[in-house]
Length: 299
Figure 1 (spheres, helix red, strand yellow):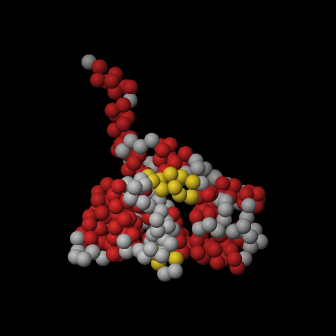
Figure 2 (spheres, rainbow, N blue to C red):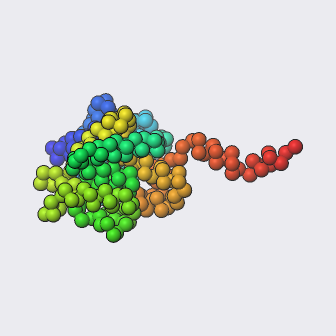
Figure 3 (cartoon, rainbow, N blue to C red):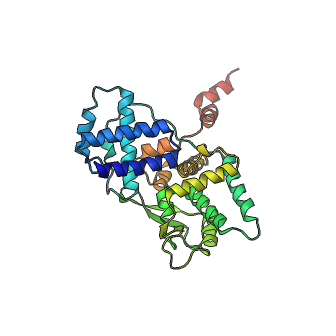
């Protein structure tokens, strides 16, 4: 139980930093996870799919919303363990899905993105530029320009990105490898930042004896948002990843190609993750539906 408790607290710390989860949300997740750990005899972190199916069956008398909340808490917990390399698999698919509608993820407008980059440009215009601003430039270019997950970004090796190689090969969730394009802008920003990273350091974004933490990355992104006049609670590294996907889709990107770049095993995840704004959908119907031509021909 103590091992579960430690991992639960680490997960909740990430929830607070990444999503800006409210205190009540954190408390609800803690309660659901601790109850699940107790039901599994202290084996929540190591539970397999069969154990989670049995746990789900014990929730049959609960309301649909309660089951949805418990399942969501556990699925996010197992995704966190997989992201952190604490599990080689993610058994969350075995948890019940009571059919509640999944909310659309938050995103940013093109204007928001322009404001973030304008703030970075203003910082770099100082003489001399602060190396930390070079780092922030590289972080932002890779988050928005390549859609990297926070864990993938902070753990990049020092030489992972090269000026003459316009792609990365990453090992993401579930150990799956994927090819990620890296823009000319991002490669140039990384090259400028790497000049400040000692050659003996193994990570591109070092901190202490290791690499920049996800919590610190969230703090840096939100500080940049506040400086750019964007409410910090609207933004996180994950929101920038979603903006990358949404804006590519709006620009005509193929959904299957986007699935590959994002590292999604299931195309359904990409479909939810890359929602198209309602105005664009309405315009599409008004311009492309066959009945539009019929209406134009009517006397």
